[in-house]
Image: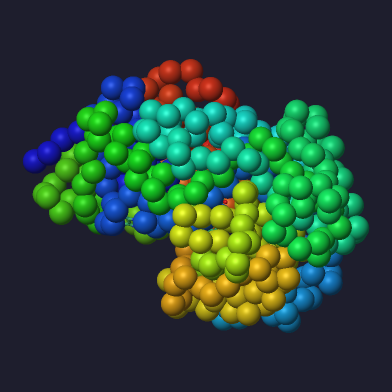
Length: 415
Ligand SMILES: Cc1cc2nc3c(=O)[nH]c(=O)nc-3n(C[C@H](O)[C@H](O)[C@H](O)COP(=O)(O)OP(=O)(O)OC[C@H]3O[C@@H](n4cnc5c(N)ncnc54)[C@H](O)[C@@H]3O)c2cc1C
């Protein structure tokens, strides 16, 4: 029988960062995953550490955008019709949380965590010898129409009050930064303080290696075997039973698989998303990730090629992939940058674990002593992994948390 102080379930960017933060504070920690670190959702993101993003992704506020999504003409989102009744309550809550006043509230509540995002990655990547994966060139949001740019006015105002650096650029300004981009847009904002990652899988693996250097153990096993064994929690790992006094559930979109049998049902939905790498045509290149705002996709330069990531797809987490958005996106993406052939035979699919209020849960679990939760990071899981690790480790070890954790409590759903 193996025993550690703490078991962390899930070795994505969040769980791995939590495990490192706990090990650094002297706890004996086992990190359990059924696969290798970083191979889940954390494998496939756009690699943007968005510590300076202000507003979360929001429900469309205009009927034209919504109608195009409903008619499956929009590159921004897709859905499975049969899944809509299931996700309808979540969508209603998401729509309510997308009202202007609520977006401002979310921005304020997320700010303390977001403000630490880049610094925590900088520190952890330095410890892990992985700073070579970080690119400190910010990221670009492009707007094809005056109206789309004008709609950002509130976000830019708020960025100013938060002191978040950004530079509004015209076409010439963008081409000075990114000469390969074709001038199909009218405006851009360069968020200069953002950092991006050239290989998210390699970064999580480097953090996991750091965890092992700190004395942590990585164990193969199925988190769904979690159960009480006397006063401990037990996971039936591949190597045998593993006991601990405390457990952190950091299973991203799979957290409900473990929590529901324990009577904890928080309103998580998934926004599925895809990526595919493309070889650049000729000497086309990018120095930073680029968002085509009206079309909802990102082009992110990665070690594997130019990674084209899609927006949201509302469908059951485990339903077969339906990467129909690529057909709608690719003409737009190819207008912007000379993309050549795809690198992989098929797109990759992941599922962003999302609460409707765009805030993660970083907290004690309700009803179950010794159980902690670190999941639901939605569009910001790469960004917030290390900051989440620090916050929950401070809470679990009785240190003063670097920010008020109340906005990330599970209780907010139970009131
Ligand atoms: C297309 C796309 C683009 C994105 N772009 C960005 C971006 O630019 N910036 C950003 O900050 N975020 C981005 N995100 C979001 C980000 O990738 C996620 O929020 C983040 O990866 C979630 O991390 P996680 O550790 O919570 O979950 P995961 O990485 O999914 O980790 C969960 C782990 O649990 C394990 N697991 C599951 N079930 C079990 C089980 N039964 N037993 C054992 N182990 C189990 C899995 O194997 C996995 O390793 C993007 C997401 C997508 C899909």
